[in-house]
Image 1 (cartoon, rainbow, N blue to C red):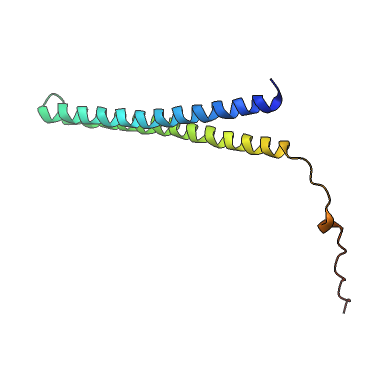
Image 2 (tube, rainbow, N blue to C red; image 1 turned 45 degrees about the vertical axis):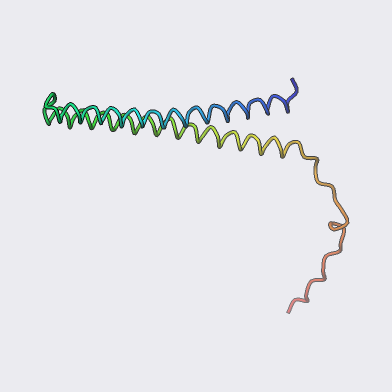
Length: 114
């Protein structure tokens, strides 16, 4: 496998991982919301005291937000890394710039120093 094919494979894999991590982040937040709703149902029916319900809600909310945001942020970071790698691979594949007729023009004369 040549270098270009290997880079392309890594970029494709990074983009797949990005999608999985972003979905995992949203799924974690959704599960946290479901957990908080279940806690509220138990509190409303009287199965949980107010203190316990508040404690459970805080723990579930913080855990869901932090872990969901971490997974989502990791996915975004992975996507940005894939884009940087793709840009670097494209830049490395371009031939070096050759001096053309526009580069051979003489520079305009400088104004005299006053």
